[in-house]
Structures are given as C-alpha cells and as structure tokens.
Amino acid sequence: MNTFSFVWLRLTVISALMFSCSVASAFTLSNGEEVQCPVTLNGKSGFATEIWNTYSTPADRNPELGRAVAVMRLDANDWPTIILDAQAYERTSKGTPAQWDFVYFHECAHAQKPELSEIGANCSAYFDMDSRGLMSFYSFKELESAHMGMMNLPIEYGGSGPQFWHQTLQCVRKGREEKP
Image (tube, rainbow, N blue to C red):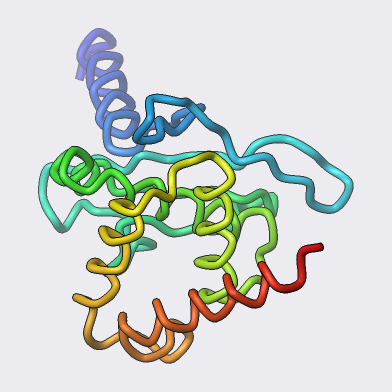
C-alpha cells in the first residue's frame, strides 16, 4: 500500500469514528435556550461532556445506551459524560420536546450527583424544568403520558412507568414541602 492510500485510509477511519460519536458543547432546550450541565466533582469544576451517538445501523449504536435514549457514564478520568442517541432525538424531538428536556435534566442530575437514584434524578429534572418555566400543563401531561406508556422497567425505576412517575411526583411534593 502506498503512502497516499495509507493516509487516505487513516483519514477515512478517523472521519467515520468522529461521525459516529460527536461531542457537543451544549444541549438545546425546547425553548431554544442552549444549556450545559455544570459539574463539580472531586474539587474539579466544569461541564459534563456530551456525546451525541450517531450510527448507520442499530449494531453501531453505542452499547452504553442499552434500551435508553440517553445515559450518564463516568469516563476513564471519572468525569461525567452524557451519551445521547442522536437518531432518536432527530426522530422524536419535535413531537416530544418536554421529554427531551426532561431526559437531559435527568442525566445532568446523575452527572452532578452520580450516587443519585433514578427517582431522585427524575425529581431533580422536574425541578430544573419548573425553575426554567418549562413545566407547563402541556409539558407535564406529555411527561405523564410518556411515563404511563412504559410498562416493564427495572426495579430502580419503580418497576413500571406509572410507578416511576408516581414516585417522581411524591419526591416533588416532598421537595416542595421542605422548601421554606
């Protein structure tokens, strides 16, 4: 293989890898606002890394996502990384904007406090949306409907979508009662 072909092959592979997982610096909320997830861990402050996973076939999808559209994982340096399914976002974000805002804030809550439970992350996402004016009646109903449609979930999510939502709202009520 000549030098030109080898360089071309390397550039093609690098380009493909960059296309399959692109790092973004901000998430665009349904109201058009761009946000980043501020994190302070082990005395280090910054923003959680965002990786928008793009893929051409389901087999190329990031295995960390499992059945989820987004997850938070700690990278090799123990820094929070939010991995988002770019194809799922592209297909559904216009029809379900509140769900994507909620997903982002849920994963951001995990990034800020990796020990947080799934119910706690949902609760935090609810408060983040509410404080930004994103928790309207319609947003609430969109989120409620999405949770009601989830049947079987792992126990850390309450076992089902309706239970997950019920426990989230219990946490929200408790949080409101505790605020002065």
